[in-house]
Amino acid sequence: GAARRRLFGGGADGGAVGLAGAAGVVEGVASAGSVVRHRELPGVQARVSARFRRFMRYLFRERRLRNALVMALHDERLAAAAAELRGRKRLLDIGCGVMPHRPMFERYVEQYIGLDVPDTEYDASGVDLFGSATDIPAEDGSFDVVLSTSNLEHVEEPAAALREGSRVLEPGGVAIVSVPMFWHLHDQPRDFYRYTRFGLEYILEQAGFEIDRVESVGTFWTVAATMASYHAFEFHRG
Image (tube, rainbow, N blue to C red; front, top):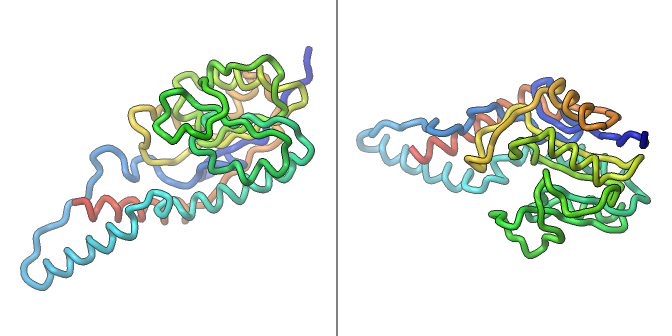
C-alpha cells in the first residue's frame, strides 16, 4: 500500500501526550458552575475584598493571560516542530480559527492554508477553505503537512477526523497534532474529549499514521499554576 503518514504527536500535561500539546490544566479548573463564592465582610475588610476582586478581574480578564504559561510551553514545542518542515510545500491547518500559528509555520512551507467550519465563532476573514475536520473539500494527497492544534477534543468523531486528515495527506507527509489531557471545559457545548498518551497513539495508528514521537508539555507545576489562575478568575466573579 501507500507509504504511511508520519506523526509528530501532540498533547498534554501530567504524563500525557504531547509534542505541541495544549497542556497543563486540570479538567474542572473552571468547569461549569465551579465558582468560589466570597463572603460579605464588614468595613475595611469589605473594601479590601472589593479592591482585590477588581484587581483579579483586571489581571485575569484576558483568557490568553490566564493561559500564558501553558501556551508559552505549547508554542515552544510547536516552533521546534515547524522548523523541521523546511522545504515542505502545502500545509493545511485544520480548525484554524484566527490562525495564531501562521507566522510560525509559513516561513517553512510554500503555502499555508487555513480550514474552518463556515459557522465558526472566530473571525473568518482569513480562512482559505471552508469545511470540517471530517469532511475536507480537497483531493486525496493534496497536502504534505497537516496541522491540528487543540482541535480534536471539539470533534464528535475524532477517529473519522484523523482518517480524513490521513486521506488528504500525501504519502510521506507529516501531521502535527496537539491535544489536551488536562484542561477546563471550554467552547461549550462542543467540548467532548481529553486524551491520554495511549488513547491518542491508538486512534492515530488506527487512522494509518506512523508515530514519529509523542511528547508531553508541562509539569505538575504547570497544572497547579494554571489551575490557580482560573480559580482566581472565578473568585472575582463570585
